[in-house]
Image 1 (tube, rainbow, N blue to C red):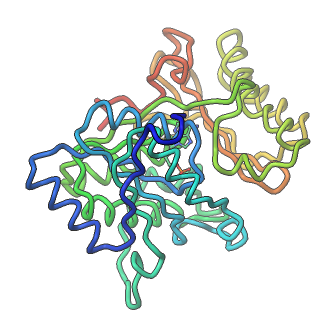
Image 2 (cartoon, rainbow, N blue to C red):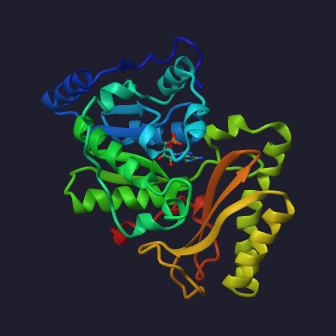
Length: 310
Ligand code: AMP
């Protein structure tokens, strides 16, 4: 983080009209725009996206908006951590020029009636019809479509931690002819392996310790899958989580393109994704197994559906 005074605070924009004015100013000056959509309570994962945006684009816009329509439970929505002053300082340190932080009424005014929905790949894992928020991805694509129209970014940056989200947004961009290129960045982790997440702040100390089992379970799956086979590897990962007292929502291997189930490693990269609840906090994580290299992408910056999968 920069010391106070070394980074200019980003311009804070609250309204749709204000964001349109920003967009038009960048357009008239011929500047490229990088966009980082977030729900705030920023951490190093978000900042890694912003830094990459600043490296690749003339202007960086970050949205900070806790999008109510992507939450399945109102208690999860209400307990989502917030600290705007801190976010503005951190955003400044990562080279963000504009923070768009609208009120819910500005994004969803009375009478708002439209949804943008991607089918197929949204109906598994975090969008499973039996899950607690089956309309999660519809909420994500609706808000991202609106934000892309308002910001009109050249590049938009997403994290591999939310691999399914990145794939869904990519599909929407392709299907609806948005001009924005989607860039997916590796998962940033704490020293003990826990994937950074705004929700980690809600973990009580014992649960914070327990949550480290999530990353360990994925590593266990990688190891056992390479030594035995994928199905034994998945069982070993699940067992490790259960032994740690973590409630598993899903722990599955999926094809990175179709998100269809995968039974065995065949040399194609395979996403192993987990969602789990620790002390009432829902956390997700994933790794990519590739039989040829037997390495996770998050160590090598490739933890993403490959570009050619678009
Ligand atoms: P969120 O505020 O959780 O909606 O996340 C905003 C963006 O930051 C999404 O594209 C996430 O995938 C990304 N992100 C969240 N956590 C991490 C992380 N640990 N490493 C990299 N990117 C992340």
